[in-house]
Image (tube, rainbow, N blue to C red; front, side, top):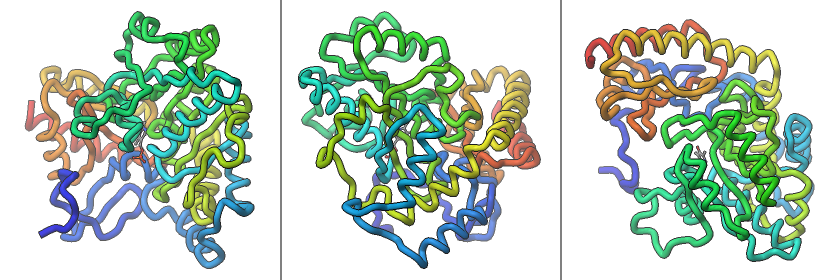
Length: 388
Ligand SMILES: *Cc1c(COP(=O)(O)O)cnc(C)c1O
């Protein structure tokens, strides 16, 4: 029997090791891994530069308290700020911690300017911001919050794409609007650039902070360093996590100067967040991904993949409803439940993962090659032909 709690419905498969795009199972089968720990292993498994960084740093220094200077963290924060809208960074260990710290920063800002009642956060219904108590109530999802009351107060919700309800839900106590630039768990739904622009204008008019949750879609996943970049919009706060550690748990909140002014000494902390081991790996991941040539390659591979997937959709119009996504955050939306489809892909040694709305989510590493995409396309086509 398993002594692990049963909060996961796990597939009956385990792995010995991974290399690049591939995972090798305990019963010696080779799988094309297009889950990559849910957009976490942004450079695939056992990337030589990440292995070297981890090995070198592990001999020097793993952990010191944030009570002291951490040069590796200073370096990563500086790079993130030079590269983006941000002026300051707070390091955490996970996505939920990052979104919670984002909420704390938004509230603390209004508190610090004498508006403590301006503390409500407006979110999209059935979004995903993590599994901690505040984060599940931020999601407004019945399934995630059921049985976990009392309700964490302070969140309001509107439906994806419903601009009237968004405007109606804003009041004088709204401190921030927090949305995923691309909803990941929610079914790979992209907020269009013009919407992001309108959101920014609305926030400016009503003195509301804009939080764009890029935990899943950030760090090159969309083909740009951040998914919101194509809109030219500047958010106030951006939580990140998944891809920045390349498999090492790292979370962070990026903030502009205005928001950061509220986070004075003693307002927030993390024992593990930003330790030398994590920061060293983060620096190497960033050096590889935050590079125009690297990101252009993500874009071109994505264009090819999406084009070919749309061809497959045309071939099986009764099975596939829509191809969704941007960059290498891709969803195949089926007309019916996707479980069987995902299991068949797995039988054919291709790993994918579900998302809401009958979506098969596909998350290759960002350095995936065309030849690996071609293998995946072949398997997808084969499974479509079996299930059509
Ligand atoms: C995964 C995810 C989170 C939560 O991250 P954890 O590391 O699981 O806490 C938050 N927001 C978004 C958009 C995510 O995809």
